[in-house]
Amino acid sequence: DMARRAPRYLGIRDRLKSLRQKRGLSLNALGIAAGLTYTTIHNIETGRTVPGIDTVEKIADALGISPAWMAFGEGEPPSAMAPAMTST
Image (cartoon, rainbow, N blue to C red; front, side):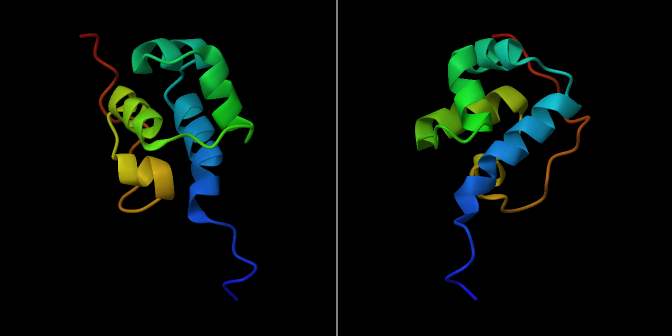
């Protein structure tokens, strides 16, 4: 039943928190790597904020994952041991 299904983007908070924790990253460490604030990452994880495309891309780049997976859970889920963040 489509009427009861939550929009797929709402799962971003769970995908983000789960992957961040599997990678052993703090909210602050991920925020720094993505060029975002601790508060932004926290607000996404708690569902206070639904991130825009630019924010999703920054987080996905920092984690080395697909923005489509981060935003909508589409495609192959990333490995917890995927490439670590690289400083540029």
